[in-house]
Image (tube, rainbow, N blue to C red; front, side, top):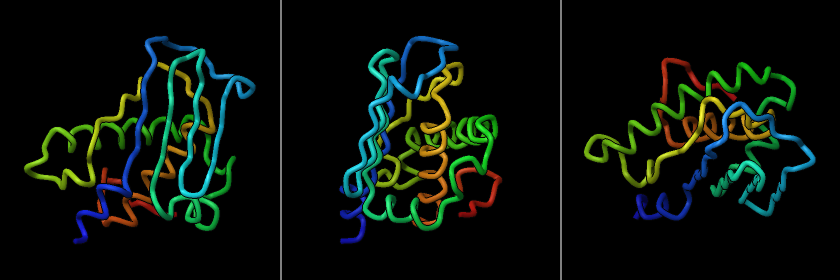
Length: 143
């Protein structure tokens, strides 16, 4: 069953922090990338990003724009739009596939997560929209 695959394939999880307007130092980040799982954590800010999706890692390496292509402000502004729409869809399982939108994303707009976190989240949203034929905003997703 096609929908059953989505249950195991899609997971984007952010545990937000209660701190505001703090910058994330690259030296404090614990960054792990194994097969199709990407994990970024910062214990001092109490956040964690885990992306588990069969195919995202290879898509990121082959199709995504390189790091530095977008500014951090651009990534943050797009992520705000995408996260808001994602969370709205999680709350409306009768209208949107609950196997695609399993859980809310706790993305604190006042926290400075840093370039790498925003880059990976942004690219996951692009990958998600292209792969599952979803549109999370008025922006047409392009690799």
